[in-house]
Length: 283
Length: 255
Image (cartoon, rainbow over the protein chains, first blue to last red):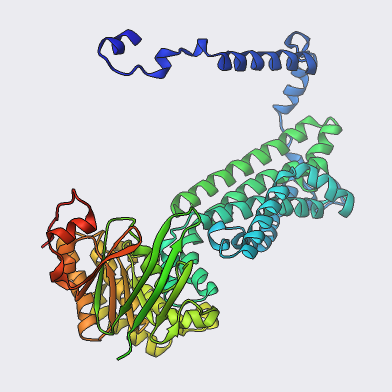
């Protein structure tokens, strides 16, 4: 193939001159990948031949017959709020409240974390860098770990879940907001500055109109994600429906667990649908 | 009469070591229509932006109507800025808001932070906004979103916004470079009108020499950050043209 180019006096494309299998770096890459996978499978002891299915038919059979009685109260001491349906609603609110708290903190910080607003002088540049590093650190701690820590401090329950989820979301939504601000058209900023407006007036007049839609869009996206995360928090002490699911699995109540799982799936799917619809209209 | 604008030994070196302006000195008399010409990258934009300190000069001094612009800080700088209107090649309107709000924003230098946040414009500002929008012939579009307007209309809103400042000096950075020839003339005519009727001094950069000849009372040519010509439009002959734009340049007319 390279001859075709040479015969016509044209430059030969590099990928024809040097096919991939002659490049030692690529060969090394493939070799390393294979080695890592081989060692990895050996290390974790994953062997499909040793998977056992003895209990599967029984458990799957129970899961296939969800028990809706878990929806309501289970004894005379419980109200409807203690049943699975009540706890599902509580968990949705857990996600909403956590999102709201994180927005209150992240919204003002996000302006300090936007490069285009903060490269005015060395002091503001330092603030920008610190804010973005804080966002990154906060974001990098997984919610489940945060819930375990929060449950130790505040006790097992929804309070721990709210605090952990809100904390994590500050890092995520703060970064999303900051990047939305960084993505705006700089022209109006320049023009409004030229009118003799102060920093606040510039942000108010030239920045805000440009970021309202992306902010609302990101907020709904995170609300969706947080409501989706909320049921899982209960598994490690964050309260809500996750705790009930965990208990029922421990007690081998698979029919009740099955109903709870279905409840969660329906909720998450509904959130996903609503969030996508709203964001589509905003775009 | 004292000069409207005095620039002394102005130099701007960007952080990437580009010497955008190299020891520029000039005086502009009140009421002049000064056209800046020169190749892209010759320093026209930087010069205009140094005058209202959107770009911080490296050294040199700018004096506007007796006030030292280069030394001004904080509120003093903002009060100086509000006396200088500016219009831009890309119009730089806030696209998602109405034409009317865009015009009103020209008034920000006169308004308090609180008045801005509560969104209450004074009666005088509202009247002035309609007056200036009427003047540039765009009043019937006042409540449309700015991005629904054509380029020429957007630039006219830009002029209205600048007029709201009740400026003494109008800075125009390639105001017609994104417009077609016919629209270019209509926008330039508004600039000519505010120069002649209101006596506002104009400092305007342009690409087309034909426009410079038609509207300018004085032409300053920049090349590599230095002034290579300063005189009347009529003085630019073939030889001068080649000096400004390079040996291979051919003049393109816009009528």
